[in-house]
Length: 326
Image 1 (spheres, rainbow, N blue to C red):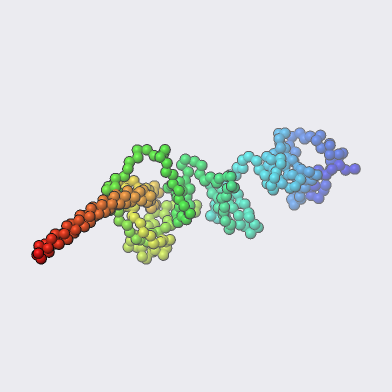
Image 2 (image 1 turned 90 degrees about the vertical axis):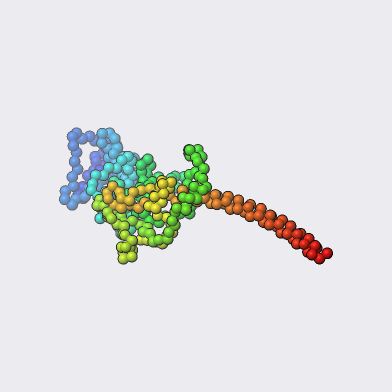
């Protein structure tokens, strides 16, 4: 009687002699090769799991439920890989070519991944953390997050609008040094040098073509060019300050950051710290409030003096009348 089926090759079943207990006694010296010719198929059969070992260590296995484990003897998913996956191959996400493609459905939608990019193809890409786990982007001192930009200048650089319910900044005396109370009159003088304006502003800078290192160069239209090309840009109406004008005020120059042109020769917008400008407004407003309170006190004193004088004048008029009419 034939023993248990070891594998099927080209429709021919190959059995082991004896019982399954004899399988462990099979040895091979040198290189063993099982070859299926042309269109022949190779089928390995096992009652529970199939293990692939080298150097007396398990490298891969197929569990009874069909899950495949690589470096993992208890796979919990269709493909369960323990340790590192190393793929050396070319990729071009712009053309849909990547070392890894996780297909969501058979229609080709899914997630493309290569060494430094993750791209969604036909589906929304979510980065979610559970209630007790965080989502970390850039766990490095020099790491920056760019949204719609390939050259972020700050920890988080967004080329476009940002919408949020609130913005909370750190403000703790333990991390502040050399504090100086802003002088009210000086702050008022600085505020008076600012020129608030209403204008049309580009809100999204053109980005480099995906996969290209060619700088955009000069992309900001001049004032004269703007009316004829504005429809080619995303822009909005806005009221605010002009960074170049603020930078020209020595005491406020530090509130302006960035360079007008980067190292590649591409124009880059300057940034303005409106929060610090607002702090000078607070100091100036307090100074004006103090001046107003002082003027109110003077006015009150004058009103009291006028009332007293009016009483005295009325008394004098009464006396004069009495003298004129004895």
